[in-house]
Image (cartoon, rainbow, N blue to C red):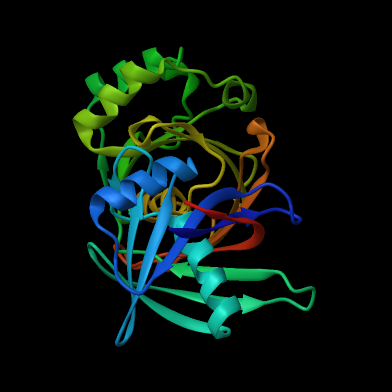
Length: 281
């Protein structure tokens, strides 16, 4: 099965989160998609099939199907822009319809903007939060009290933890299997550990053990969920911000986020891409 490897949300043509992109005349079986995702070895691979008014898209991590993946959507948008031209593409995902817009810069770099699924957030039970914090060697005192701990959703579910100290973010470590088990209990896809440098620039790390990956270098779905969360808590920081992710992994990534003040409405997440290589799965 032919696949492309694209790094989404790259920063200055470096870093980014690698995604596999497979375009087929017929959608492969779930077994074939899971096997291909395992062979490619990235946190997600997107599988696309052309339909009348757009593209049917499914996302697979090495260990499971994921309902929505932001960076694989950005990567797919860049591939479609390169093959079929700049513009808007409609994606039919498991939960409904989203869109991605592809454009090309004067230097030839492709940039894509996704329009996420609708968002929601809700408080996370304190007992559960305490268990998660313990696995990361953190306590409630390490969290910024201005940002309540909540579950946040934008296609998939995340846990939002905002730290007071950038050093705590850089030192992030956790036990893989216990955290994976805790996340599965609540249906979490990633945990968003965050530090606010300012209202316009946020640093992020995203453990993803549920998908068989220790950490994501760029997570578009989590970026959209974060925007929905900030809107829900009546954050006064404005309607746009950038996220720097992957720095502590040596794979710097930049995600640009825009949102309206209407609760529940979808979020725009944008980023540049870079071509890695083509492989045969």
